[in-house]
Length: 78
Image (cartoon, rainbow, N blue to C red):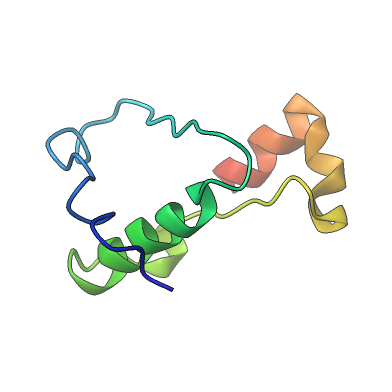
């Protein structure tokens, strides 16, 4: 569900640089929704391939093994 004004509040000026972006906020404040909207914009409007986007939910048991730094690095770089 799109949140009114959230897209307009994204600062796109540094989105194309190699700096790491950090999204912080209160629990249940819409961070995941905002990241999903950014992902969709990158895919649909900026023609970024889905294969170049990594999504990891650390609350999912599927990614339990990524708590190890070496395993996480291998997953992200493969």
